[in-house]
Length: 159
Image (tube, rainbow, N blue to C red; front, top):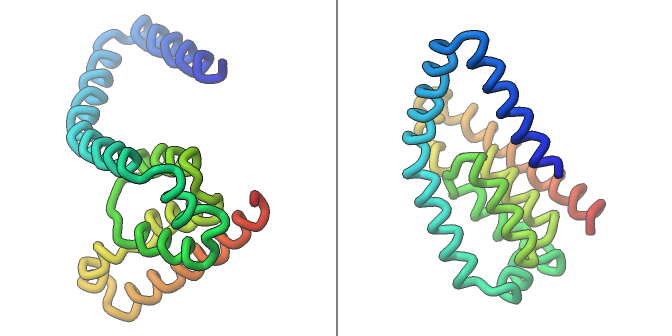
């Protein structure tokens, strides 16, 4: 129901914008379409990879390695996957929801998403180049420590 309300609100506001200034609304829609076209290839690739991974990994496998009972090993696996994976945030959250429905634990998913957003193993060479070795490593270390703390809190509260 909430989704329907959001779609109706967006449609009403688009209509209101179109009635106020047709040219401006048309330009905005063209820009939005261009942005969508630019994001679409990445989005499709990630969705295909996620779909393939979820097709290969059954519920038992996800529960064993990322479930609430996986404990420290599950957190470590989630941290490693999140730290080395480079996917945009708008894909990370639907992926997290899919993993949760496949049996992953809240703490492990929190670790995965937090490290995905904050720890940059793949981007570390670029960060070192711009910020220096010490600053880049400290940033990643503090981000990882934050991920551990928040994962333990969320895992403890929701498990």
